[in-house]
Length: 130
Image 1: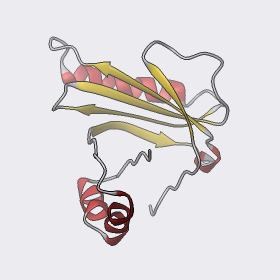
Image 2: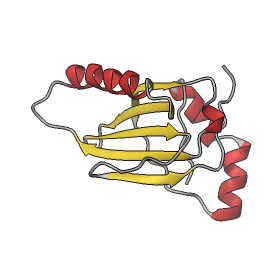
Image 3: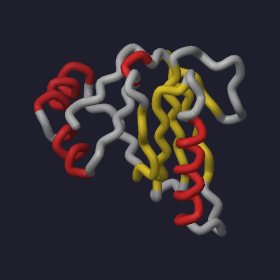
């Protein structure tokens, strides 16, 4: 399944209402699209070389202030990007489910996965226009 990170809500809107998504939906049926609000998203210059992705889903605490969690997620992403195996990191929250999703793009598969993490093989990374 593809993962997308848009710079703006308009980018997502334009993609989902555009001809590419219409062709995909016509060929394979309209997929379920899970959306979230990005809190952090950065990639290294070689992000296209990513061959693995680790996805982590976490519940958000009802007592933790969202501003504090958002700041913590930026710290999480910047720390992960210091690892030479990491090529991209993103963190987003879903206010409908009050959950957090973290995505880490990697050159090589990790030796072990943390609890609640899933490993995916990445076939292609497209960065799109700046």
